[in-house]
Image (cartoon, rainbow, N blue to C red):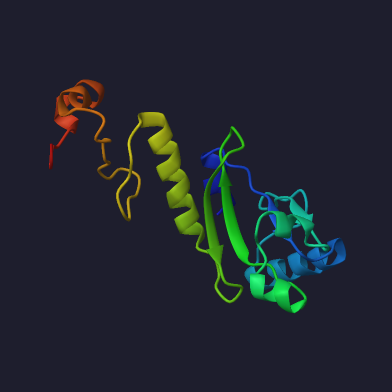
Length: 158
């Protein structure tokens, strides 16, 4: 889904608690199993940080507290961080290691954040591009009609 991120002007970066040699093997496995081409320089590739010491993982709270306390090898929690152009973390999605991430949901959230930032609105549950949005209660109905056009404003509650 890399082209979908490119359309939204989103840069991807990965973080892994494995070393560089393991990354190479992992990329080969991904390419073999999925038929993709993730090797460096290919269209689907993106940088992956090798965090063998888990220093970055600890800084971003990506390690389960129970593993820290038991002094076990700390497995990283699967997390997605959406960082805006001003380098502000806008959203964190955290998944247990046993659960894969949902790239479609990540794209939906990026669409919501970009739309909200551009238009000064909010999005309702399960919103996708092209659906109705929410005008914040700080904007009067009259002002909303001026800003978005009367034909585009549907007042459900004043």
